[in-house]
Image (tube, rainbow, N blue to C red; front, side, top):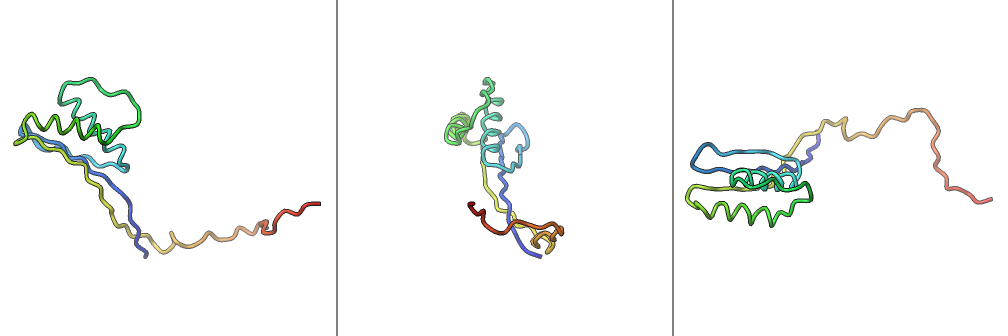
Length: 109
């Protein structure tokens, strides 16, 4: 078996009112978009229109939310590299199908 790695991003948001909200995403953009949406929901703000999320803008919004009660509010977006085992069959080339393949370059007439 061979070892490969995949990326995962976790978002943790919480305050003293209940347990922390933990979400896992496969892309950084999805994690930052979720942070923006979660903070807007907690602040009673209008949802942001669908477009590319700016991580810096989402972090500023989350920092402003946390500044209201810095002792009880928290947020974090964390990147992870998760090792996964791949079976040996996943790394082997495909079997030939018996059909001829073109290996030569095109020749001009």
